Length: 383
Image (cartoon, rainbow, N blue to C red):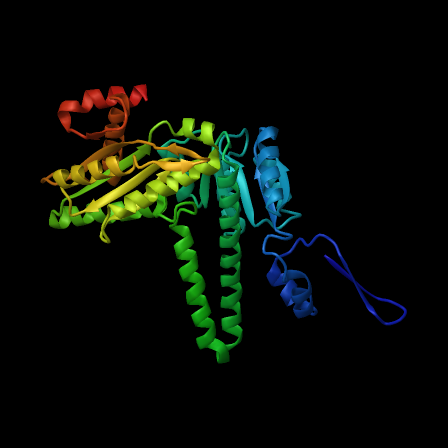
């Protein structure tokens, strides 16, 4: 809150204490314009509050340290119940929460936060990186997810910055709508600003911050559209799952920052080997996704072989010439197959990728239907 005092010499003394209210509330105050100009025109992260929730205090400490270095004020909680209590005394911009906790789980906490304030951006932290857990969190309104243990502090910081920027943009969007209702004379100008903000929000929601490629949320949407086109018109298409071989060893030997540079290099290779009608995305971690529109199996194998060779180009890292390899799993629809679930195609490419890894890495495998189902199940269980 703000305590305003008039001193004996009629000068105005403003004492700042913690502000448990939104920027909208400050601007609605009788002194709102003065307060906004004096206290809000600073670094975007300055005075922004982040909540970290995990029943493991060491995880809270690691995440808090990274966020504090970025300029956030950090509040920690060791349970969902404690986290909800903090909402009574703080206004949070971003929340990082574990999924598996006693009492209120991370997914239930996500739902309650969304109901209280949909502009708060919640990032899920999970050691269970399975498709179902992540998909459930994203469908429940999670902004993004981080895999535990949290070793890549640079990615954690980048995710926090992007989530914070997204929250501010969304709140600015709400404020702008309020202004539009109150000021019809500025309608045209405000609509232009609103359109720009919405475009930024839309772009941020479907873009991977490290590589600039499309993210998993966008990939899921475009895959559903592609399957619908296939069912209606019979247009063939293929998907490739590409995974960097022994990427943990690369990070261990050269550090996460150089590991990120390798991921950016692979992104460039994939873009060089795709068309405007294709979709290139980062599926998570060191795994990438390429959807080849109107491309049957033979064409997909040609593209995959080009990627396999081009990614071996040496890179200079800390004075050393370093090259990496990838494994690629291919799944395709180019026959009269009745497929309703797009996720089934992802599972097929994932099984082919497991097979490529199991057969020595640095290779391509194509999903084969019924004849190899048993083998694919065994590979997935072993992986």
